[in-house]
Amino acid sequence: MNWTVTPERFDTAEATALRRDYYGEVAGRYWERASTTQEIDDGLTNDGVELLAPPTGQFLVGRADRVAAGCTGVRVVGADTAELTRVYVRPAFRGSGGAGLLMDAAEAAARAFGVKRIRLDTRHDLVEARALYARHGFIEVPAFNNGPYAEHWFAKEL
Image 1: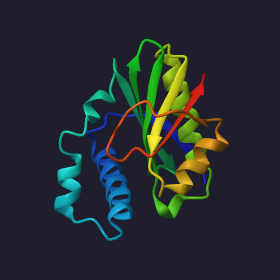
Image 2 (image 1 turned 180 degrees about the vertical axis):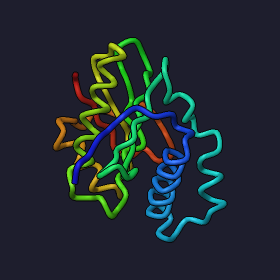
Image 3 (image 1 turned 180 degrees about the horizontal axis):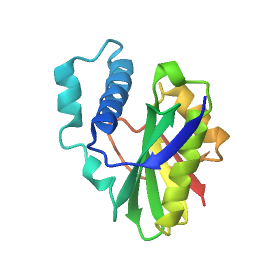
Image 4 (image 1 turned 90 degrees about the vertical axis):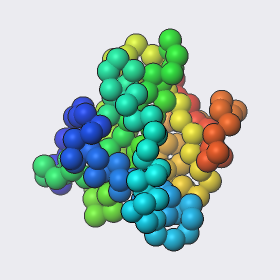
């Protein structure tokens, strides 16, 4: 598979579909059942995605053979810190190297904003995500927020 990762507005049709798939999967895993359309709509309402656009952030879309297959976002949260968010690869494209390319592109975007570190929080049940972050040099750090779904916190110096 030939992957490309490029910045894209968070509200394009493909970016929106990826964000809906992402939220549907993480919410469904949390609730241990399929998410309803209404739950996905509610979860995406006022979720802060508008901060994933310059000058406060960047939304990135990964395409495998020109098909929208994954996404991630970077949000600047301080003079030298950005947060990684919404790392997602559609199930049909997992295992093809896209997640690593999304991580690399997110780090490059963070560097372009001039930050020196990138951090994230995640849940205990997102085991694959935690393994991905560790493979990319993120280390567990003390809690830096008290988000309702934050159970693990990671950071990486850039």
